[in-house]
Image 1 (cartoon, rainbow, N blue to C red):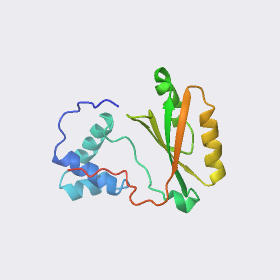
Image 2 (cartoon, helix red, strand yellow):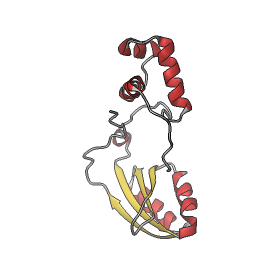
Image 3 (tube, rainbow, N blue to C red):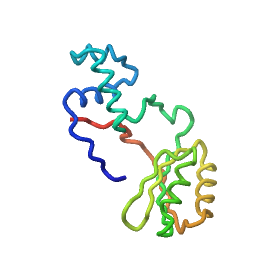
Image 4 (cartoon, rainbow, N blue to C red):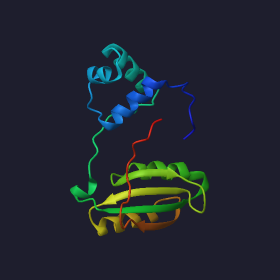
Length: 155
C-alpha cells in the first residue's frame, strides 16, 4: 500500500489515537477530560482522523484461541506475476484469513490464517493450491505466540 501524505498530526491527535487504541469505548467527553480540551474539539479531531482514513474503525480484541481457533498458519504463496493482486484479493475474502501481505523475496504473498481443526487447515491449503494462478505454497504452523498486538506505539 502506498503511503499517503496526510499532513502533520499534532500532539492532541496522537494522544487521541493512543487513548482509542487502549480503549475504543471512550466517550468524546472522557477523551476531552483526559486531554484538557472541549468535547466538541475531541469530536472534531476524531471525525477528522476518520475522514483522513487514519482512524479506520473501532473493534474489540478477542482471544481467538479461547474460541477454539488455536491453530495459526503462516502460508507463503507464489502466484503468476500478472495475477498476484487477483490471488491476494481472493485469499482476503476467506473467513479464516486474518492477514494478507504482498511481500518481496521468493514468494509473493504471506497469509496468516486461524483454524479450529488441523483438517480445516489441510482443506484450506489444498483449495489454495487448486486456485487459478497459484503456483506454490509453503505452510508453517505457529507453535507458540510470543507477541501478537496490532496496536501501534504512537509517539
